[in-house]
Length: 121
Image (cartoon, rainbow, N blue to C red; front, side):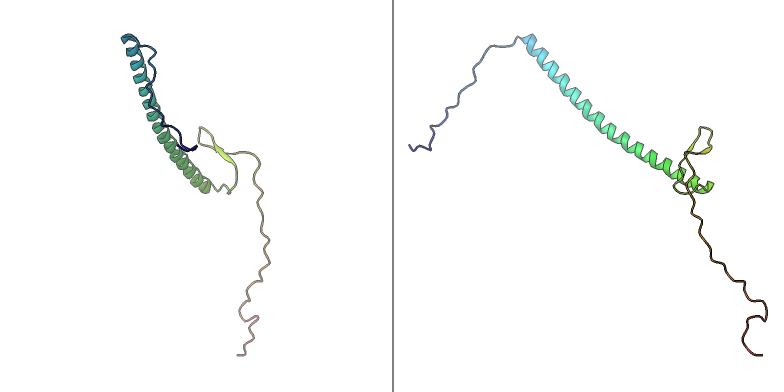
C-alpha cells in the first residue's frame, strides 16, 4: 500500500443509547406533525400576503389615476402638492409652485386694407 492510500473505512452502526417510550414517541410524532402544519400555514400566508400586496399596489395605482384626472379637471398645475379632505375638497399642501410666465414678443397689427401693399394698381 502506498502512503496516499487509506485503509477502507468500515461502515459502523450508530450506537443505540436507549429507546423512547411509546408515549414519548407519540408526542414527538404529534409535535412534528404540528410543526409541519405550521410550516404549511406559513407558506399559505406568504402566498396570501403576496396577493394582498399586489391588490394594494393596484388599488394605489387606481387612486393615483383618479386623483391625476381630478387634478387636470380642477386645473391644478403639475407638481402642486395637494390632498383631498373626507368631504372631497382638494386642498393645497405647502406653498403654491412658482409659475414661470413666458415673455411674449409684441406682434405687429395686421395691415389695414390698402396699407402696406406695394403692388401698383
